[in-house]
Amino acid sequence: MSTGRTSHRAGRPARLLSAVFQPIGDEGRAALVERRISEAITGGVLHAGERLPSEHDLAQAFGVAPATVREGLLALRTRGLVVTRRGRGGGSFVADSADPTAFTQAALRTTTRVTLRDAATHYLAITRACVELAARRADPSEVELIRARIHRAHGGDLRSWRRIVDDAVIELAALSQSARLTREQMRLQAELSPFFALVDREPAEQQRRLDALDAILDAVTAADADTAGHLVADAVAHDVSWLVDYRARLEAQ
Image (cartoon, rainbow, N blue to C red):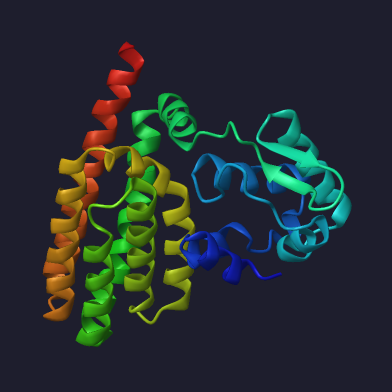
């Protein structure tokens, strides 16, 4: 299945899409197929109107039987997240009505502050470890390539901005030269990126994120692992505080 090539054509970070279609393994149940795809839709990794891979390709990617994929897709159709079209050019598609922002706002309303902070703690632990290792192992020229992509994306539409930022964080994790940490960073980035997108809807917050990333990249280039780690902690703390306040505003509506 050519998910990597498809993701580049659609303008999405290949690594995030790869995280969606990683094998499910022994837990190969229809509910997990449904959850993996639904989270990708509600998180904006799979876009409205996008065609999903065939049932055969999904079964191979997830490591489950085609019947399991079929059952998962049926559940997604029932929820209105996926539609099926017959005939030439048919298949399963993300529903046109899928709105990542609305889904994420709804998810945030039902996420307790304790759960949100716990998820952020896990994210921080992995991201900080990756960045600190990158500061010790990365070549400065690799870091500057990441910086250049971020700056080119700044000021564009939100989807493109988040795509580049997510990819940049994962690429920075890859500079840690730890495959396990990088895979976990991919998974967590896919899980939490929709919440970060809520923050970045505000232009001032996009600028703040750009400044924070610049400072982190400066520390990595300078091989200053301690400063890089502290800057990551500050950035995550800011996002959590913003999301907790925003959740309170949503509840008050």
